[in-house]
Length: 220
Ligand code: SAH
Image 1 (cartoon, protein in one colour):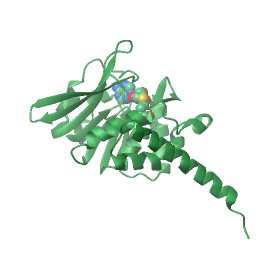
Image 2 (cartoon, protein in one colour; image 1 turned 135 degrees about the vertical axis):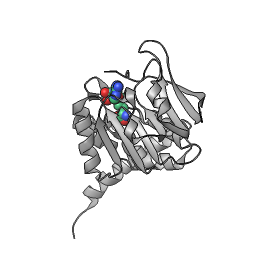
Image 3 (cartoon, rainbow, N blue to C red; image 1 turned 180 degrees about the vertical axis):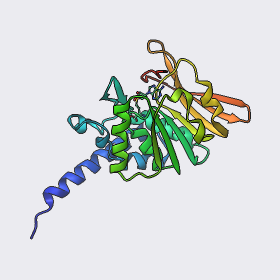
Image 4 (cartoon, rainbow, N blue to C red; image 1 turned 90 degrees about the horizontal axis):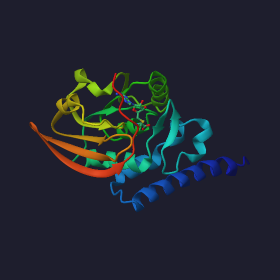
């Protein structure tokens, strides 16, 4: 008989580790079960360097090179929960692909995800991970997300994962009526707050969700 205890052991341990992350997020107040299950199923270790893979299911941001980080799972959960609050958006734009993790979580939950990144090496690496995971509903592009992605808009939701000092105007413009924009705003030294905007024709209702710490949104 073939002994599979060893192989099964590895799989079970890692699923247990992912479930622990899910439990932790739940303890911190994340309530959307679909979001929690999507996070528990996502192989986050594929989005970081092999040397950091053993830390992939900790609830922390980790370096991904080029001075950037993969977002903390708690923040990914908060942002995703915020855009899904009143129903599932069809078309979502993410600004700041980075590792591709937030885009991948969104891609499991909505119809189409467009994601833009300004650093070519990160853009290329994320593209490979999307391919490896056979994600066919996520479209990555190398560009400055300060300008959004006009030809693909308007978007039902826009998720920004790098912090500008002020919300770039094109992001408001490319939001569909009833759409939601979730974005950290603030400098690198002062406080940053995660804001949620909901569009009602030409009015934007604003809500502050959390205090956060994101890398800067770099223009140009
Ligand atoms: N969503 C990512 C978080 C990456 S950190 C993840 O899940 O891993 C934020 C990313 O935003 C960095 O990769 C950074 O290079 C990128 N970024 C910063 N300014 C940008 C801009 N103007 N346009 C597009 N990407 C930008």
